[in-house]
Amino acid sequence: MTQLTACTNARIFDGTNWHDDAALILDGDSILAIGPAPEGAATVDLGGGLLVPGFIDLQVNGGGGHLVGPGTTADDLALVCDTHARFGVTNLLPTLITDTPAVTDSVLAAGAEATRRKLPGFLGLHLEGPHLALSRKGAHDPNLIRPMEEADLVRLENARASLPHLLVTVATESVTPEQIARLVKAGITVSLGHTDASFEAASAAIRAGASMATHLFNAMSQVGNREPGLVGAVLHHGIHAGIIADGIHIHPASLGLALRAHQERQGHPVLVSDSMSQAGTDLTEFELNGRTIYRRNGALRLADGTLAGADLTMDGAIRTFVGMGHDLGLALRMATALPAAAIGNNQLGRLRPGYPADFVHLTADLTVQSTWRNGVRV
Image 1 (tube, rainbow, N blue to C red):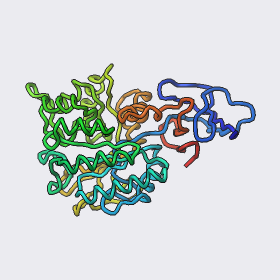
Image 2 (image 1 turned 90 degrees about the horizontal axis):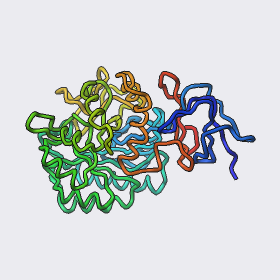
Image 3 (image 1 turned 135 degrees about the vertical axis):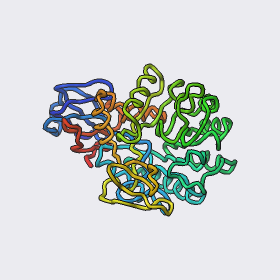
Image 4 (image 1 turned 60 degrees about the horizontal axis):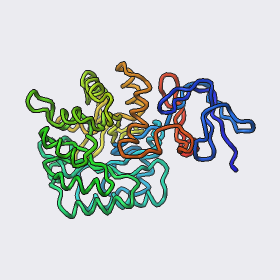
């Protein structure tokens, strides 16, 4: 039997409730309990602060100087995971934005290799495109955006078998409800984004199984008095939705509207970083599909001012969200249990017996002190 470890002297949030004057007890790479430290356990005195579930980020385009794309290997995916672990992320979906079929195949192969290696922090992949709408391309290369064909659908169905999770962002202009239903049947999480979808088209996609929206309010049809658009469909149906809480992508009032609309719904907004290769570096610019992305004033933009991802990490998103006046417990759930639920994973995002020992030690001002993956401090 492995020696038990008791993490003490920190207020513990288990994903639902707060625990004072208790220890988080680890048995190797999993959580045994929250309670009094057992006699004989190795004690880790955290010296105060907060102990919370490890953050889960469903939209991470890169980090540590690497942008997921051409040439990405399993080692590069490990670099991205390790970089974001510094910001409290214990599990993430490296994200490939719109690219060629060949690049998509190579990234899927890298993801399959990362899965075989059981890379710490690697939760699967997110493919944001190429099946989007030109009218809402954002920073995606318009020359690479295209409708989904049978070969694309089969590619994704086959890829799902070699990945823990696969999330795909699609537009109703490029993907049919029938195709969405096939993706969902294969175990793929379908998110709607980069689209001018009407309320009816978005609702049809949701009925077919689409269960998320990508970076809510950004690159999508907005709420109108007679045409609610995708934003209206998301709020009406209450599906999960990524939120980039950097104070730039979404006005606080719009964020508050989304939170209120999702009350008592099955789905809920979740925090995402939408981070690019700049995370964990001092890069001031980098390349994306042959175009320069500039890092200025807390944002990442193309030369024409178009936002291109976010200069954000998950711990920063939580601080910004709380700074808007929202509850800390809600912020933590939106970075842990709720993103896990969004991709159908019921074994992550909480500190419960039998769950992986993935957790973060935060100071009172929500600065990451240490991150633990599978019971190992990283």
